[in-house]
Image 1 (spheres, rainbow, N blue to C red):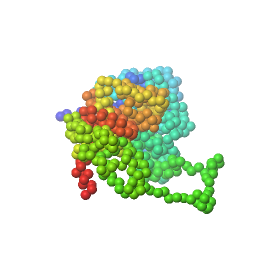
Image 2: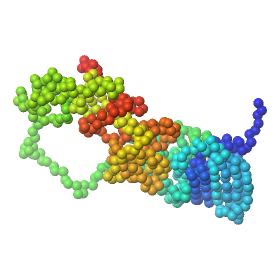
Image 3: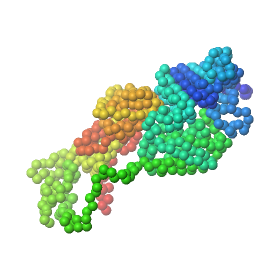
Image 4: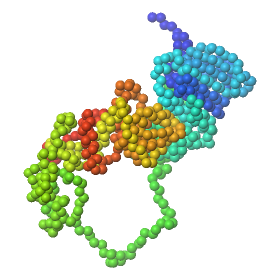
Amino acid sequence: MDIKILPSNISNVIAAGEVVLRPSSVVKELMENSVDASAGQIDVIIQDAGRTMIRIIDNGCGMSPDDAVICFERHATSKLSTVDDLMNISTFGFRGEALASIAAVSEVTLRTRQAANELGCEVLVADSRQLSAEEVVTPVGTNICVRNLFYNVPARRKHLKSDNVEFKHIVTEFTRVALTRPDIGFKLSHNGKDIFVLAPAKSLKFRIQDLLGSGAVNEIVDMHAETSVVRLSGYVGRPDLAKKTLGNQFFFVNGRFFKSPYMHKAVMKAYENLVPDGAVPSYFIYFEVDPHTIDVNVSPTKTEIKFEEDNVIFQILFAAVKEALGKNSFGASIDFDREGVPDIPVFSKNFEAFHPVREPQIGVDPAYNPFDNDGFPSEPLSFVNNYQTRGGYQQDNDFLPDSNSRSEDVAGTDSSGNHSGMGTSAFIDRRDDYGKLFEDKILPSRQILLFQGVYVIMPVISGLMFINVRKAYERILYEKFLGILSSGTHGTQVSLFPVTVNVGVGNMLLFTEHAEMLSSLGFDISPFGNDTIVVNGVPEGFSSEPGKVQAMVEDLLLALSDDSVSVSVNMYSAMAERFAKLGALNSDPLRSQTEAQALIDSLFSCGNPEFTPSGRKVAMIISKDDIDKKFN
């Protein structure tokens, strides 16, 4: 076996696999270069989600003709001269791999000029080879255009996601860079349409508002801490507005965005017992540390940071977030202003002499035997406290059964002698339809009992059957949505008052991409600007209350943002399962036996009423023997 040195064009393609993952990677690297060049304005122009063109224009310091040529060589950098410089990184780019990696998998045109030069330079590079370099007239700064990304790596290009998904990633990277420098103006346009036009902001809070909307600013409070190890600043979200969807969680160290599950754990620990399970608050937290105490060279994408004293910083972050939450009261405040408030009357000590207080009398029927009532009540009954019988109380025949009137039949007859319809002939044999769990005889609807609207209880020959309402809805909706996704269209329940929800620019693209599927399922959702949707209607069975619609949109985002299902064979089943869970969570508790009977009928008509799509039990039977054991 002979060992040989790889040609530069092949090694650059290999390096591009680590640095250039998708079009958003190119946007990130080039925007960071513009920030390092001290630009005051950075324009990002995208066509076809970056597949066709990515153009970054800045008014920074620019490059000389010699630098414009050599910058495409691998490891060419102006940031490092010695090994010691690696421990004092204060800029975004320093590895010298970005431009070389981008030029290895695309066609690049670079135009640049320094203020001291009258003419600029244009360099054309493709497949890591310089095609031309000549003088041109161009403004001060840099204009770099990347075309036909991955044109020479078809496998990489083929596996790019849809335009909406890829552009969502571009918006994410654009947002991260824009949040690091509120003093710089930014612009993002896609296919000729302006998405963001950000003027230099007065403060970070104004930049957050420009990027994420006024709703995001209303959700956050100030956070600050300063120690000898780290200086923390930024904002943390209100606990009562935490959302199920991940988004608006940002860490920055020395002006650089980074990801850290460990530091995220510190934030969530501070919110312990303040947010519901599964909800995540917003936060924008900026770390300032000595550059010598961190390592930003952990990964080629530079999104992972290694802190020298991470345990100490963890505790400081936890304490800072906890303090910020403690200083800002999110509950209702006490109003000491009594102007215009009616006075509460003060009673004198002789009040009881003129208005005597009588102790209420409790009526009890000592002869009442609850076991005389055969089975479950046919309808929900209200208690009437007027039973005077043997002990001075009169019996109410509608409420208390007479102990001598029981029939040998299951339900017997009523006081008028008419059969109540609850005898053995009224049992329904459904063993052939409902699978192993339902190989029992179920009493008709008059025997249904609702428990807090979330469980349905029915007597069967062997004991009691318990049905979990939410899981039953999940099974019913799964089979309904599966049929809709395969062939049909679901009915829409139009809301009397449409609900407006701010979802952000990136999430807006998800609704645009899946608009046809959502419409077929019964969702009537229309765009309202670049970052807001209007929910005009929801599928039948979903709640249209504004609060539940907001929660439904969050769950929709979770379902739509999951890219794990791409095989068409499993896509319908997986999407139906997600939307079934969403519908079950969004459903209202049962309020009447009529609703319960409709649920049971729908459940028993399913192909597999025993389990949810994920394999969890929908119903269970507690046998008479198990009940008897409770009384031993």
